Amino acid sequence: MRGIGRILKSSWPRLAWLPSAAFLAACSMPSFTPHITPIVWPSPYSQPQFSTLAAPTPNWTSVAATAGPTLAIGTVEFTPSLSLLCTTDALKLRTAPGTGSGEIMIMTAGTEVERISYEAPAADGYTWYQLQASGRIGWAASEWLAEGECPEFVPTTGGFGIVVSPNTGLGTPWMGQIMNCQREPCTHYGVDVISGVYDSNLYSPWAGRVVQYNRCDGCPEGDGNTFSAASPMAEQYNFGYGATMIVEYAHADLSAQELANLASLGVALQSGQSLYLMYTHLDRDLTDAENGEFLDQGDVAAVMDNSGNSEATHVHVEAAINESGLAPRAGQSVIGFWGRTVAERDLTSPDDALRRGNRIDPTPLFGGN
Image 1 (cartoon, rainbow, N blue to C red):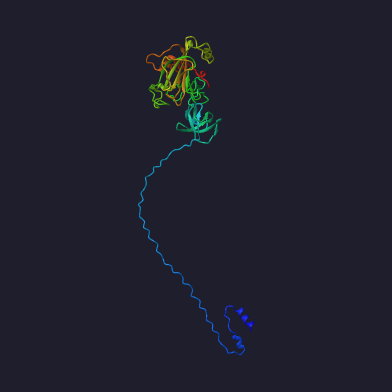
Image 2 (image 1 turned 30 degrees about the horizontal axis):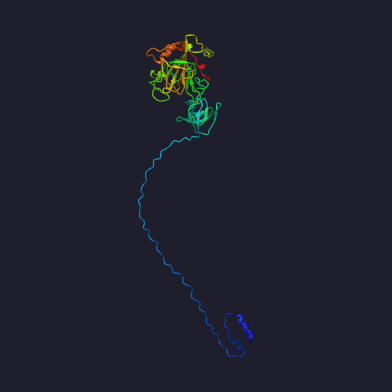
């Protein structure tokens, strides 16, 4: 019987060990009813109760917005600058690439300009840059532009300057048609000369004498084009010539070699004769000359500019051969003295030879034709 008890114990481990009542019943023992007290499990936990909290009411102070000052934004014109360039010779600023394009202005040698575009189109054998010069925008051939700032002063050969060739289109050649001419005939009995590289001085090629100089006090003050557009040929502007100087180079003052050199250029002076040169459109402030002043070879005779009826810095030069020692009469204007006394020309004559008078082509006297 011990073995059965152990089996029950191992089979029902959750029940307490009881006396062998079932076995005893099988052995005719009195019956009994087992009494098992049920286990009462506790009720499920109550759900937690949370109180509802009211959000606090913010206590904000109202602030009135105040408008700030009104910013005035203006339109600013901006032109990018790619590089600073310097003109190495007189150069035209044009409306478009190409030598046939419209002319805006003539830039003299030593003018600082700004390149404002990467474009570099080719036209008429040149490469063109878009530039800004003196507040104007246009195109110019790059072959006459050097990188960087212009030097303050770089003298050239110390010669006269460079005569404007008809092929360059920069000025009016000998016997060409005068610009801005208001009365016929409009023949150009002189040549237009531009500066050498970075140098606008006019040097005396030989020993000479200043016969007459007129500063053109009637011209408006200021640099550049100094004449009235309404009357560019007015007498007060020296009939459009602006500041004007007449220099005499006498046969008696020239050496045999100098006379031979002149003869090779087509200027054959005889004894008692002089070569007279008239320079016009001069710089009224930088040209310092007095009537009767003597010049040594290489002296600065004058400085070219844009005074009078002129569109760009240059000098108009006329040459004439006449007897030595001519001088203006009292009160005679510089242009009157040149035309009536030196050149002895008749402006109203239908004959070109009479209108030309004693004047000759000065082109051979200058370099760079």
